[in-house]
Length: 489
Image 1 (cartoon, rainbow, N blue to C red):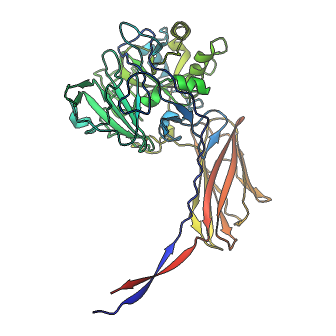
Image 2: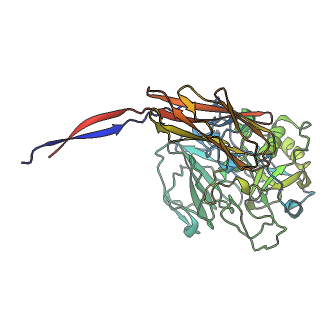
Image 3: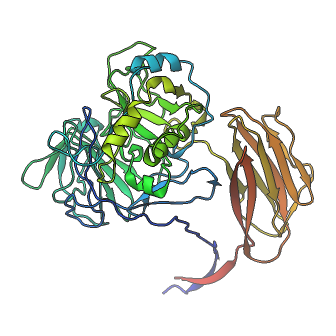
């Protein structure tokens, strides 16, 4: 027998501190809907907790806050305890200050400068069924069913957690949208039907991780023509009760181009004219449009169209905005008020400057990072602050926390044409007015001067015009090392 030889293993303990912030829960809504429909109509919105959800009550929603916060609503929606993609996802990113697309006038005329908006959602029924695109929330571990796809080469294979008697969009598109709790996964199918034996078939299907910014393979469809998820673009009454819609909306146009632009992954047209918008094109309600005369619910929708805009996601009736069925919608009010707002009140925007990667839905946002994220006494740390310009005056005040010391002459900024940052009295400060969507990167170094083991959180205050925000970066000071004897034979 070989003699046991002791080996000393050094294990560094990483201190993990999580802070969960969430807004107040919103009471569940009832489910069903309608206003006069387009090509896509729907079914009732179901309860979130049961596996076999019969269309009866809606899922709950709440606003979740993030490490980067803003005075104007910028938190991602949550459904069934799951975020509807990260706060820096392009669906959840304000675009009010982005430049107007150079083809804006052509795109507006293509869809209809004199054509009014229309809510493709509401309460009650129309032509025998509820209107809107429903969704269902199922618990983690929901039983999965086999499903086949007509476009299986561009669909994510099953099985899918489709409950018994799920809500299916009424009309021609027959979408099913399922949020699975726990792992927070979104399953969406198009042209869906039951085979009657516990299995299902659909035209196409897509699976999305709601906690990630992953886009589909470029060229692949989803349950939507643009290859995008449908759920994050729905107007939901739970957002109305929360006081704000904090994401872009989905809409359709009768004629689209045979191209797609980020974040879309797919197109579905033979039209080649550059005057016709591609799938993925974003539009916003003009800032000059006065929304004050409108009703409470309509004003919330219109403010979202100013702040977050809407994404062209499918071929369908012109200027039809998608939403989920809910008995609380006032159909007459929605139709009358939205129809008075025409295409001429909108403009196409160029959001290409927000792209971090062509294969990610992450949008460039204000942020702060620290490198390394764990350091020992006398080691230097680099803080990097990224600011996304929006053509307003931006001010930065970054008070250094106790435990670090500024390294002289370490301040730098890009682009170099920006005003120079300054350091005084333990504060890094800066002010400038970068055009949208210019990315300003400011960095500086500090030396860790504390001998204790603790978390050092550096919080900077940013202000875009009158909208205050915070960005932060944490560093673990002097992480513990534990020596454990191991025995080897």
